[in-house]
Structures are given as structure tokens and as C-alpha cells.
Amino acid sequence: MRTGVLLMLFAATRLLAQKDPFSADARAHYAIIKPNLLRAAEKMPDEYYSFRTVAQVRTFGEMIAHVADAQLRMCGVVKGEQVSANAASKTSKADLVAALQASFDYCDPVYESMTDAVAAGQVKWARWDMSKLGLLNWNISHDNEMYGIIAAFLRIKGIVPPSSERRP
Image (cartoon, rainbow, N blue to C red; front, side):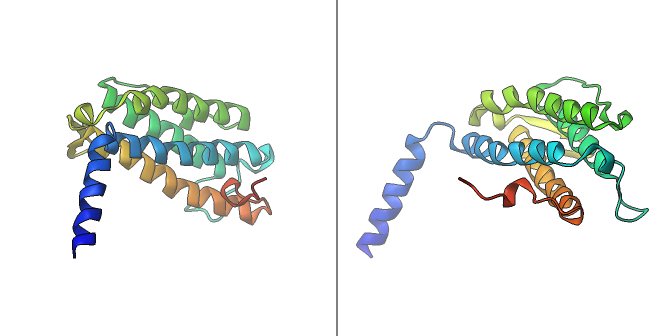
């Protein structure tokens, strides 16, 4: 019993000692999905950017555009800016990889500068009111959901997704 209490006190002390633990968690999770998405976009050959599994599903290129546009919009809301997202109008691999990179370039400082105090601020996303951190976490969740689909597209074409590559 005493050991459990001591462990809880130790954990609470460590949490309090960490500056901005909630926004730090978001930064860490964003840093995991970012290279996987960028690398997946780079790994897919240009000729497969128009590939779709069935008529009701986006093409690979449309998936990349969707991620880029959604990220720009979400990070724009957190920043309090109206962002013009137009990756959906692009079709070439080069343009779509550049749009995806631009969305990360726009979002990087949003995640880097986030503090727990700022993260508690409220924003409107679609029909929901949520915290800024809630929306940034929604972005991470969306990125991971889209990456799962993108990874399946790569596998169908015989390409190992970045998250499954052997590490040196």
C-alpha cells in the first residue's frame, strides 16, 4: 500500500516538473506521423498517384491532397487564420508532395509554440467547439487514419510503408 502511494506521488511530481506535458505529448505524436506521411508520399511512384482501389475511394494523390488541405485548415483555425487550402486541385506527385510538405511547414510552428495554457483556448471546428489542443490532437488522429489508408495503397503496389521499414 505504501509503495503504491509513493509511486503515485513520484508520478505526480514528475508530471508537475515537466513543462507543458499535454502540448509536449501532442508534439511528440505529431513528430511520429509527420515523417511517415512525407516518406509515403515520396515512396509512391508518380504513375500510381492516380491509382484508386474502387470507384468510391479517393486516389492515392487525392489522399495526399486531403491530408495537406485538412492540416492547413486545422492549424489555421488554431492560429486564428483563414487559410487557402488548394492541394485538392493538384494531381502530379511533385505538386502534391510539395503541398504536403507546405502543410507541415505551416503546422510545425503551431505545434512547436503550443503551451498547455494556450492549448486550453477554445476554437470552432466545423460544428464543434473544442480546445486548441483538442483540434491539434484531432489533426494527429486524422493524419494517422489517413496514413493507415495510404499504407494500404503502398502495400497493394508492393511497396513497404515507411512505418514498416527495417530500422538500422
